[in-house]
Length: 137
Image (cartoon, rainbow, N blue to C red; front, side, top):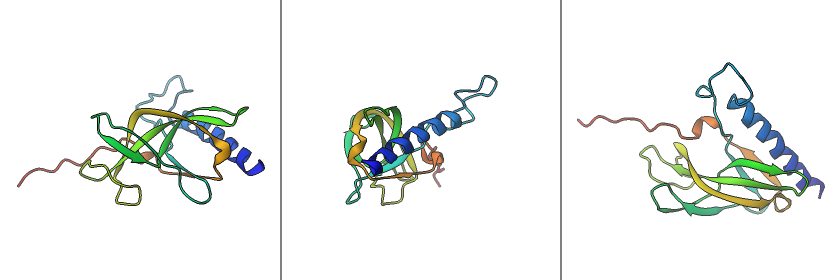
């Protein structure tokens, strides 16, 4: 249980840092400057956790990258939202492929953190990164 409790504590700290990055607790700083998500991957030790959902366009996708929405430390469970990995052209890709951006979605799930043994945070700059505009020749 000690290792699993560690994941719970790590995610609690991730949520605190995520709030600081978004400037939620500042009165005079615009939250447009900050990032509101620290994306992360959860693993069981044998494999990465994967979930499926629906894109904002209604298409099916699978992902192993999430945003922490809330955490219940006492029960060691978390509400996470699914992030959709896309390439430089905006098409869904596997996280092992060339991910250019992670799109936020409205898909949320609750997970029991005692099932996981490791957490891998990713760069907040990946979330909702604007795709490049390519002018036709």
